[in-house]
Structure formats: structure tokens, C-alpha cells
Image (cartoon, rainbow, N blue to C red; front, side):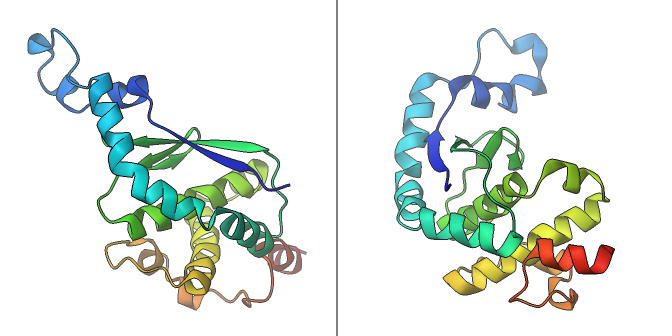
Length: 179
């Protein structure tokens, strides 16, 4: 099963992270972030959403193939926010960026986190978990020819030095190395 990706802009979600709300609490009489801003964010995000949706099935199949794990969800809601400090996988929240290639990379990264079983991710260090995700991410980026020089994850985690063969899924690799 390949999940359906549903993009949303949540006023409450953006309001929670509106940085201006936390700078000077005495002046905070009403929230800065408004539903109108959410509508504008959705309009700004439309190019990215269309761009992702045109390849979503291919990307989701690649993630399952490269990780070796089936999707367990039939739909995944992706909240787009321009107020969060960074993106995260649960609930899947994508920080809006003008560069849609970078947004694409980050969304793939977060979707891989959603695909790899949580108990497996929780059984290792943050560094190991992020390295696994970045190795799968890089393989997918290379296949789709996606590039974002501002994206630091691949260099930080030295994914080119990871010894998993590209034709092997993460699940197969872990099974062989952990047993």
C-alpha cells in the first residue's frame, strides 16, 4: 500500500511556533499569525505541492524499496509551516522554504523516518538513525536528480562512507550486519 500524501496548513500549528509570540510576552495581546497568512502560505506552497505530487507515488515506492519496509499508513498528513524552526516527522511538519528542491529533500527525509519502524529507530543512537535516513535519502536524491547545496545532512553524516550497497535495502543491510 502506498499512502496518500495530504498537504495542509494549520493555523493553530503555525500559531504555536510563531516566534514573535515568545519574544515579548507582555506585548502579546493577540496572535500575530492569522488564518489569512495560512491561506497565503498555502498559495505560496502550491508550486511545491504540485511538484511533489507529480512524483509522489514514485518517491513513496522508492522509499519502501530502499528501506525494505512496507508503508503502514494509508495516508500521511503533511503540515506546511513557515513558523517552525525546522521540519520533523511526527506530526509530519515541513518548514516552508522558497527553494522547492530543498523542501523536496527535507520531505523525503521526514517520510523515510515515517517508513522505518519506530522501534528500530528508537533502538539506536540519534547519529545512527539519522545516518540510516540520510543514506536512503541520498540514494533517492541521486535517482531523482534532486540537489540542494544548502542541505547539510549528507555531508554532516558522511553518507558516502557508509558501506551499504545501493542495491541492498536498509532492512537487508541491518539484518546482515546485526546478526
